[in-house]
Image (cartoon, rainbow, N blue to C red):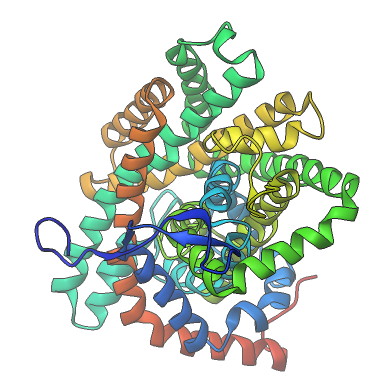
Length: 490
């Protein structure tokens, strides 16, 4: 119970480095609050993984073929290809959560947090499959050929079909309101705030010419964002299908180069991660730590269960909703299992084990978020903070333009599709870019988390109620693929 008597939190956890009664180093726990929202997300991911027959594993190969265009009919309705929908959605998920968020997770949960982060990504693939399949199934194709979709539509229309419209509509409106807030917070202010911090660090820190002038950085970013978002989803997808592969490539290559450079330490790093994750005390500290920080940041990063990505996937050209659900399950894999793990490994390897306690601690453990990651990369290449700065700005920019689309779709669901609604939201979004660059990180993170995590409550309720029909659709699609009824175009 919280201070008001509401059952919002379960008690316990943060981690500290101490020794047990026998003198062995352990991760001890102190009293902290674990938001119930994280349990809500984890349980849903586990339920959908089992209920959908481990679609995250058995549907993986098919999803790769769909992205390659094997089952893509060029005459299907929609605005973007499967690959463009994937990159547009990835640009909203592969962002600073992969850099700053991972640093927080590993710093708080210890090396074992990396293992639990991977688990979170793997089970999150199933949640992403369900919500993105529903996004396409209940989307609306407008007179001008544009598409409107996402939780707002499958909550209202899907539940209406089940005679639950009196539940669906309020859930849809609540989701839309939180989505607008999330687009301005986590999808905007958090991104530009951390991009500015890294830009300032790379140009001299407190002595940088930009120090104290976050609003100037914000104005520049707002101008670039405005240029892209004016063109809508096609313009956004046209940018993200180039930026996402490029920025992921730069970041992963940089991480791999450090891991290759210190390859002799990689086995020990994996051993440390596994032993920390499964030892009695460390598993508790690592697992719970990743729930309050790591999984919190992982969910913030890959957004599985949040419902936001289904808005971008709804614009895909397809007549088979399941195809886009299968494409979408690749997001948590790329975002968390690959990119987040690369970051975590670099941080773990560049950290140190205390000679007295025998415990691992990150490089520059007094720093927060992106500064920890920057220090880890800089330990291998002193000039790397400049490269990381470029990657961070690209991550932030791509995330912002995609979340502007999410927010716009929610805004238009509430206020109706009109030029006035369209322009007013885009102006508001650009104003918040400037505000975000000028605010302190703590305020930005709190606002971002509250809005984005609030989206998962109505979304997952809808997923539970509508998942039986998705299970049938999946079985039908897979059987038709195996029989050859689904035509191959490549």
